Image 1 (cartoon, helix red, strand yellow):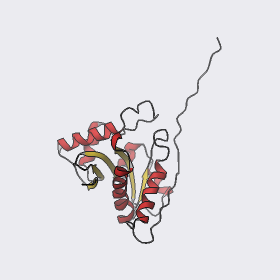
Image 2 (image 1 turned 60 degrees about the horizontal axis):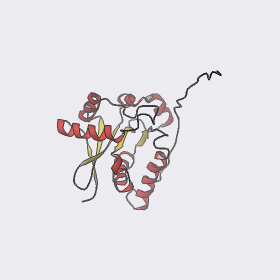
Image 3 (image 1 turned 60 degrees about the vertical axis):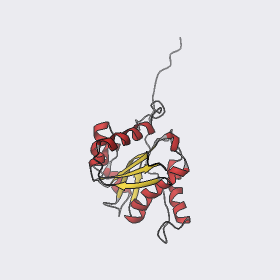
Image 4 (image 1 turned 180 degrees about the vertical axis):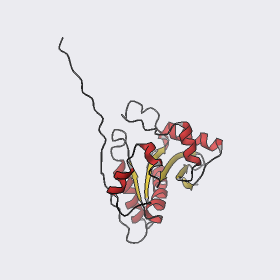
Length: 193
């Protein structure tokens, strides 16, 4: 059985929520000093609420044995997406013509031991198929350049691979834009002793 990614509107079972919280939290474990912005934008209660909220689409990745190994979440409710520190007005301005079809994705999480193409492709291609091809929307996201310097190119490559494999609608083409960057820095005085 191959890895599988399924779309859910609501997840309310407490056991499933706990298992998915562990996937989410552990996907970013050990990176506390790597990224200036905390990559875990939901606390446990917010996470459970988002899983139960049909405004958040949940993409759940399982391995060959049916074990939860990845989670993606997207919403077109950009006010709710502020949890990821986005500015809805800026997204609307930069993506005209997509009102109601801007899918903000604050969660792309795969357990570290499964972060390779065998699992990433079914995960991202399922999200692509729904967000970009079926809904004719646009995926919007942010990521740490320290942790994933090539994530935008990798996501675009998944779309290009879907086109190459004939898994995308005829005439589809992938265009990726970077339209902002958040810089974290410091200023200090070095004293000569």
